[in-house]
Length: 163
Image (cartoon, rainbow, N blue to C red; front, side, top):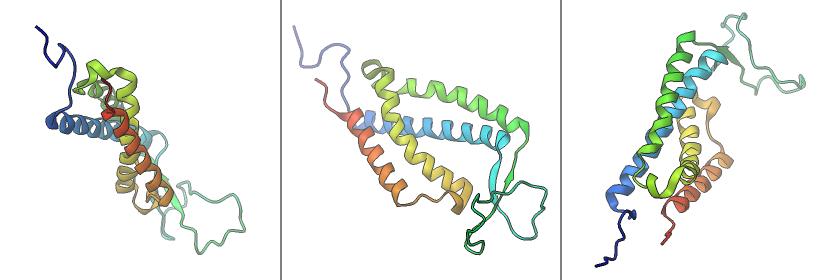
């Protein structure tokens, strides 16, 4: 006796689609915030400086001194404490397990899940980075176009019919 659905074969349902997108978003949040915490302790964060800021903090200055300084914004680099890197590392370890929760993981496998996740990661990196760093990380037209292309590509990878 055979049925139209083979044993062990995966089919997309509306609930599976919502779960898949939610898991991609959760993975993105974990990876981005984990990386952000490590980065903020190791490299530091850009904070827009004012003339009253302490000069002992390193400042981002352009290599070409002929640039009009009135139109340039300068940023101080502020490092977070070492334990930010430790917390970020734990979050990144947890991130490693999140994609395993994908409803299609058994049939799609590692390569396809991570390739599709990459599209979501690109857009989430722009949006979360902008939220965390403010105007210094605001996406431009190329970022938006590239982000849209990557999400469309991710959706094609995940939902392309493979029967």
